[in-house]
Length: 333
Ligand code: KG4
Image (cartoon, helix red, strand yellow):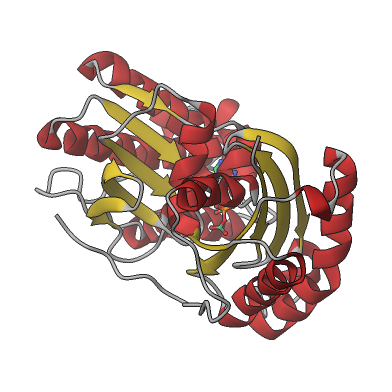
């Protein structure tokens, strides 16, 4: 049995998890800083770092208690070191180094975006390489072609807003609390998309890139032109359009590169309408699709401990000079 500690402080959530053998989750805890930043209209990086300092070790103690394990039981420490807010990343990485040094443990640096994809593999052993994934969150909308752990290429991505950003900004425009995605989902369940047809940006362009800033503008224009439009119908129209473009392009990419499986991951992968659109494309194309359970869609540290296990058993370890990076560079197919 190999016990891994995962730490993620890449953005505004402090997350700690304990995972056995890469996929058995003993504890997966997150403290959201959302309420602390709400009044400022966005995440204040300096404040986020300070809050990570405050939350991280108490959260570690709670995670150990939940898992009924002690620091002495750990076999490795995995920590997100890229991409994210530099100050926030530094808090998690410094804590990871301190723990690794104090207990003489191997340290593993994890790419947060790769970990989101690994979250699907943690719960679905039948998802095997090669496959195509769509990562959809507040900051990312990317289609990857995976050949192995760490061996992947970008097939396409958003040219402007991430889809989560589009949903959050559209939701805020109609007065929904942030993050607006889950509220839009609830409204859409009571709405009729046919009453509010929305554009499907770049759907018929070749390639696998997206654009969501135009969809956000279409929401603003539609609301201004139709003051009596029901928010339920707007939410249904918006989610149907976004889901349709995401699903069609992802499955088209999978077909073109010749894979039989698709993975959907990231915070927006929690969305019901998107999952249904993927299920419809899967049925139509014969390409299967897998997604994580809700706690593994949004930011979490279980996926970091999980991917950390793959690095650990391959001997891909970090030294105590492990650096942080705000961005990661992509290899395009
Ligand atoms: O991966 P994530 O937790 O972290 C960031 O990128 O920060 O993703 C957050 C995004 C937000 O845009 C939020 O509105 C969206 O995921 N989201 C959803 C749902 N749950 C979270 N969007 C649509 N439907 C949901 N059920």
